[in-house]
Image (cartoon, rainbow, N blue to C red):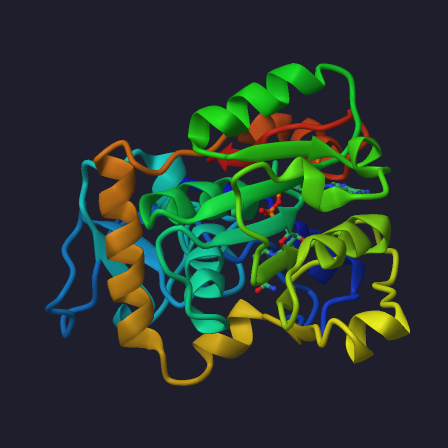
Length: 297
Ligand SMILES: NC(=O)c1ccc[n+]([C@@H]2O[C@H](COP(=O)([O-])OP(=O)(O)OC[C@H]3O[C@@H](n4cnc5c(N)ncnc54)[C@H](OP(=O)(O)O)[C@@H]3O)[C@@H](O)[C@H]2O)c1
């Protein structure tokens, strides 16, 4: 393996709070990129030196050498920067699928999301923008908020609000010429999820795909009765288990193409394996908001 990220779900698996977990003792990590080192005599589709990613992603990417069946590995273009190859199968694919699977969006429509600084959030902004879809983005309050807003706007975000900026009576007045969104994404829960619901238009749908604040989603009775909102959930692992191997590889190649064309980017920090503990602390939020940690072996 060349490198692999630390994703929130990797932490959840180690914590034992994820619904699927490997049998211990086990190696962590779920996605990453490697170089083929050697192949068995019956292997025809891969050669030493090929750049490969496990697709669908699978357990145990935080190690130097992995032996798995050739079908596990998806060969990718050698020109892809390794930190992007290592991170494409979980978060960017989730962003792409959530934009396609729940509501039919047309150019000019809008979406709203919280956790907009996450890798999924950054991908949602760019993928939406490329389809002419406007994005309303909610972030946590923090120091240096202007810089974060600027970064997200440079990716294509139309509006970026901190949670405290949304403590107003009439959210619609903040939208300007952006239509009320039919689709919202929630990876935070608590107040940040309530704000996504408030932005949604009549009959809108909120898709929950994460719970970073560990706070529950609460919904008013009137949101169901009078606003007729729908609440859905998305889990990539479930989607991938529906015999989607071929389709997911096609989508991954599309996403990697966007990366190579400079049309998809997100913040990452490549760290040597010797700094693993610091990277883990950064992922756990012990050192404040940090970019995605990618470990280089
Ligand atoms: N359901 C699925 O299939 C699926 C697939 C992929 C990802 N996910 C989920 O999507 C979420 C984002 O993943 P990612 O890898 O894209 O994230 P990431 O790049 O690792 O970034 C973490 C994000 O979580 C936010 N955050 C951290 N602690 C928080 C807290 N206590 N309260 C509110 N926000 C907090 C961070 O905001 P700051 O910038 O403010 O620190 C940042 O936006 C995670 O919940 C992950 O499990 C789910």
